[in-house]
Length: 177
Image (cartoon, rainbow, N blue to C red):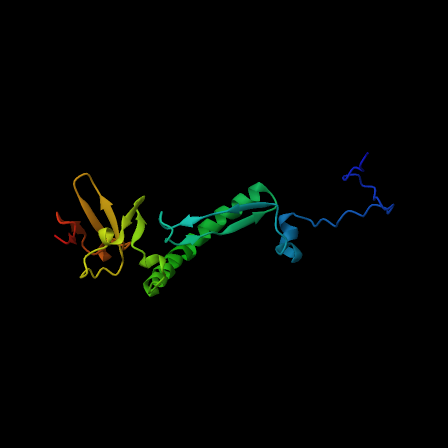
């Protein structure tokens, strides 16, 4: 059995082929005056991801630029990055993220109350990685281990805001030296 060619311009119902769609002028001058083209996506897209740190808790900016040609999209990308820096958008995003983190009170989910947690590529008991009961670090702590030492370091971004580290003692508890 032979099937009709799906790309054949002849309609299987005997209708005449449709007229080609009106393709708008894509020159830069025409796009400046054509309001319809501002809602139409250009064929070339560049997406950027600006990440403040390596962790998932760091803020991300993910702008996109569009262009009718690859060169136009690249130039718009360069213009966008320059504008984001000169206007202060990157600094403003970092400040907004810091403020948002300072307002976070935590969640009482069952997952956070479990007896074990994943840290440093290992599953560890919570009491091993947790600081002493009188630890008042509001930033949270990260456990690090060397060959002969282990410590809990403050997770604050700024060095000046960090609490002193807690060092593991011979009995397995942690305390500041």
